[in-house]
Length: 186
Length: 199
Image (cartoon, rainbow over all chains, first blue to last red; front, side):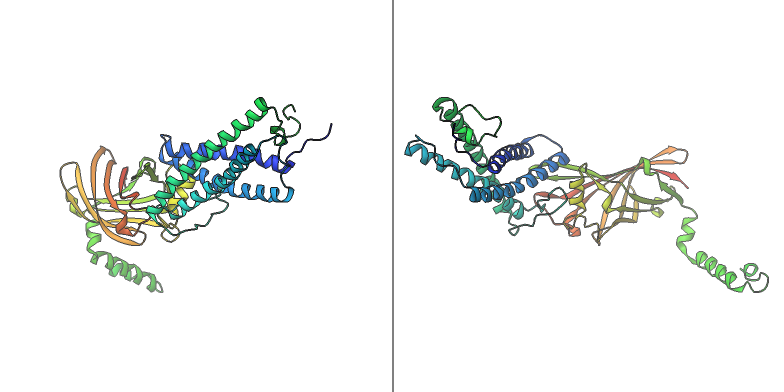
């Protein structure tokens, strides 16, 4: 049995780490914005969301470096041009949004009227990257939410497509990113 | 004075010092008032210096200052002769989250490293009715001193205990604490509830 093409171990690990990380950051952001909490709890939720959200940029950078170094497996055999094209567009959009959501958040924090910079749990303070601008900050807050929900929708689509390939098309594409040892049947 | 100034030989310098202090005390009008005013000290275990600040799109923030010192000199017969002085440690602020506390202690808000103390000293006391006095004084916050009027409800608890609740509205912009305005309200509601002990 010849080994099927896979993503490298580092990329597989980073993919799932990023997935869990972003889900947590999204849940924290949603709770911070919507939950009916007292000021102290809300402050802590926002600060944790900001710190973990900023760190997704580091995770993403590591992932891009790993991908540049180790490359991607070849296209799945038997995919139509349309499927290959759709896959590339969705993956490019996922990368773009994974960068855009935290960057817009960082800009929103930097321009906010209430000056509370991103703090990495008291270990380091991330500098602001733009001057204070209250109106711009509110626009960025809305853009941050729209981008985050778009990313959530795209992640859902990405996961649904993976399940469709696994259980309807049975083309074993999910095995390429599945952690080795417990991979789905090929 | 003469009897103090004429102790046995070679005790002249300390005796002169005592005489000077005594004379200064007699000349000082405030000392004369103080003889009729009763000194009270606040009971820290029964004192709470709380504040409330509103913000847009964020829950109302409530907190307190844990470290403070207060001195009261009260003349019940002549309330106008009473005096109150309070000092609060700015870095003793607590709102229920250590990172929130650190933010409020930081340079954008209390700047507690540069301005460790918040002080209030009364300049005028007016009795409004049997239980309420209006206390006017100077509040020093962030190094800026501005007049502040505090409404104080006083209740004698019998014995040597006195309960009071003081309320004031502080306009933080007047002290140069502009950060976050107008998202964070300019008005800070301050409530001091305390018990004081005589002597």
